[in-house]
Structure formats: structure tokens, C-alpha cells
Length: 176
Image (tube, rainbow, N blue to C red; front, side, top):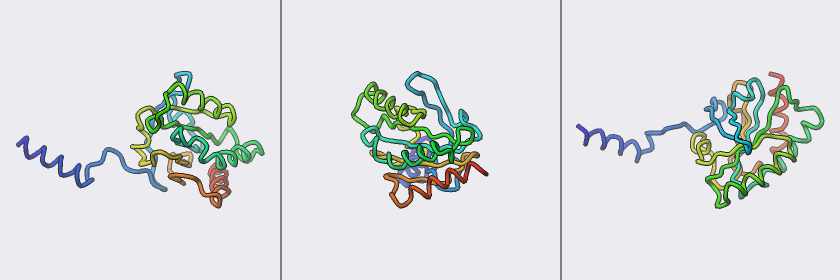
């Protein structure tokens, strides 16, 4: 009987029919997580309940890849089109995707957190990358509505021609 069970598990793993988490897609509810910041304080999506959440999940080696998108979000916030009451942008460093030591990642993250007045968290084990099916060795941008339903996901660099549309999506989601 044990051999039969092991054979069955092996079959499911080889065929991809046995999955621990489902890839995040537009229209699906995002699974929760909990990560710490540089001060050791833990955050989860519940930390920003009732807010539109823009998650920038980034390989630290690619920390500037979507800076044009983050700059556009910051501009919208500076102009009052995105507000602290209804919106939160966060960064999550994919520490497992880099050769850089964790202390160096924390220094880089600290500079970004100051520049964007945001929270940067650390995923040391690629938990979120695996749970949400994000791309490794790049940046990923995810927009979640107030109910944590994925409304947009870009695996890789946000195309220049989509930046304004994605910023407007975040603005519009505040009013829902």
C-alpha cells in the first residue's frame, strides 16, 4: 500500500497536478503572507486592510527595473490622486533570488523606503514568488483591490505604454 501511495504522489508531482499554491492571476484572490521589515516588525496584507495595495516584488539585483512605474505612483500620490487613507505601495525584496547578503539588501531597501516613503519587506525563502507564481530574477508589479483580488499583475518590467493605465487603475480602485 505504501508503494502505491508513493507512486501516486510521484505521478502527481511529475505531471504538475499536485500543487501547493495556485498562480496568482487577474481576478483571483491573493493568498496572504507575513514578512518582516528592516526593524524586525512583521506585516501582512491585513496590515493595510481596506486599502488598495500595490506590491512591487523585486529581485534586489533588479531593484531599479520598475522604478519608472514606482515614480509614476509616487507622483500620483504627491499630487493627491492616491491617498494614504485608501492606498498603500510596498516593496518586497526576493532575497532568495540574489547573491547579495541580507545586510546589503537591507541597505538598498532602506534607501528605496526613504525615497518612496514606503515599507519594504524581506522574503528570505521566495515564499511569495512560489505561492503567487512570480518571475525570478526580475521585478513583479501586482495591484490588489481592497478585497485583495488581483486586478493587474506584470511579471517583469512594466511596459512604458502601460504605466499610466496601471496608475489610473490604482486611482480608480480607491473609489470602489
